[in-house]
Length: 291
Picture 1 (cartoon, helix red, strand yellow):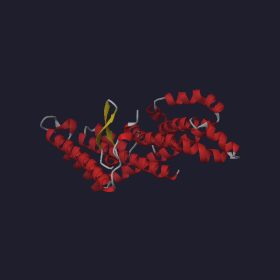
Picture 2 (tube, helix red, strand yellow; picture 1 turned 60 degrees about the vertical axis):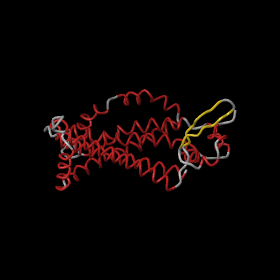
Picture 3 (cartoon, rainbow, N blue to C red; picture 1 turned 90 degrees about the vertical axis):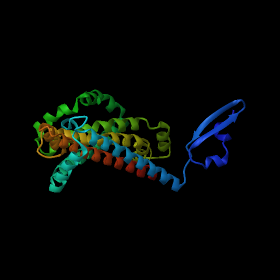
Picture 4 (tube, rainbow, N blue to C red; picture 1 turned 135 degrees about the vertical axis):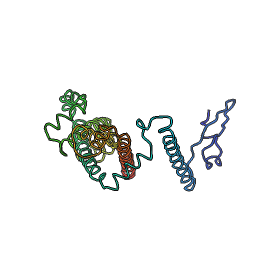
């Protein structure tokens, strides 16, 4: 039996996504073609998707605004207009910049050191099997600890300033990147390694031309997971003990039963996390093109 794709008319391939019926003998099958669009059609499609997303958000905010105070007590869910008033107050007074700087600094430093340690440690244990077997129980034991339970200990060791939040964030990110890097290094095709060795390749050639490209997808998966958790680690550290940062704003708002300020802080955190994930996806695409 011929494949369905072999029986599709050439003109049909040039059309947008649509159902095509292919007949083979007595059987008939309908398939959907996700064919490549022209440049104009592709941009129209992207615009329609973005417009649909904005429409969904607008409808949600409108329903929220109408429901607050009418169907649900405003104390519990606040309303978009009140949340905007809080946000604008923080922005106009310049107050939000101090808290953003604190949280982003803690997150960036923690993500950098945690990801760097995870990649290096994952490469070493991935290539040195006996060392991985030796310290595997220790790594598993530390990984199984709830990271939030370490926050009071880090604050006791490093104080309530920047360092304790950076260390907590780094620990949270380390294991996510480490386990993905380790799995990616272990999954490298041994035949490729043997070919490079036969051709006289050095250890640096193996790492840069075989192991690193093969495990790049795994590393980016770990980074994509680590980015939101880096923000979580920084915010949790600020909630436990801090006098500035988005976590401090969130804890202060919740402690004073200010629902509008609580939602405002959560909104800022959501925007930051979305933007950071966009940066990770963009950097992965750029890197993959150069490999």
